[in-house]
Structure formats: structure tokens, C-alpha cells
Image (cartoon, rainbow, N blue to C red; front, side, top):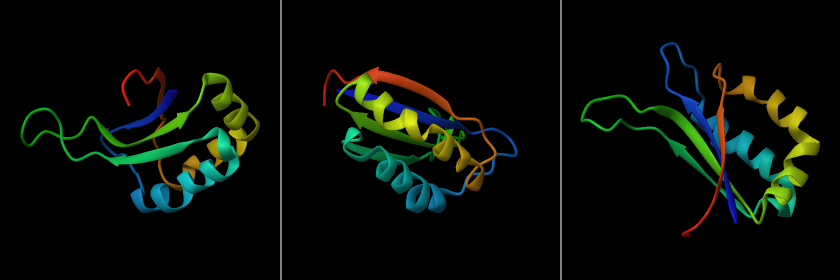
Length: 104
């Protein structure tokens, strides 16, 4: 299984609509990807490593797929529509990482 993490850096002037991300964007991604997305999670940054410090990422999601090929097959055909929706919830450029899940 793989996990695709999409993270939004918490930078000065960042705009991030958590409600839209949770209620509109991620359900759109899941519906477009269909069964190639087994499930996903959404995180809201609360704080950093030291008390009172800001979260490194203001928000993020993790998309779980059976394989890299499954992710690419589900996401690739819809990338334009998915990326076109980003401006509806943020002014940030996401950071993406694909990982193998070794403990689940």
C-alpha cells in the first residue's frame, strides 16, 4: 500500500479554508479517483514541536492506494480538475510525497 501526502506549508499570509477542503475538495478527489483511492484522511495543523510554536503545515491530506500505479491511474486523468479546485481553498502551493506504508 502507498500513501500520498499532500501538505500545505504554514507560511505568513497563508489562506486555507479547512471547511471547503474537508467538505468539498477531498470528497471531489475521492469521487474522481473512485476505487483507486481506498480511503483518505485530512489533518488540520495545531502546533509545532515546541509549545506555542506554529504548525509546520496548516493542513494536509493522505490518500491511501494499493499501489503507485493505482494512484497514477486514478489521479492522472483528473489532475487538471483536481488542481483547478485548489484556488477555491488556498493560496498555497502544496508539497507532495509518495510513501510506502510499512506499518498500518
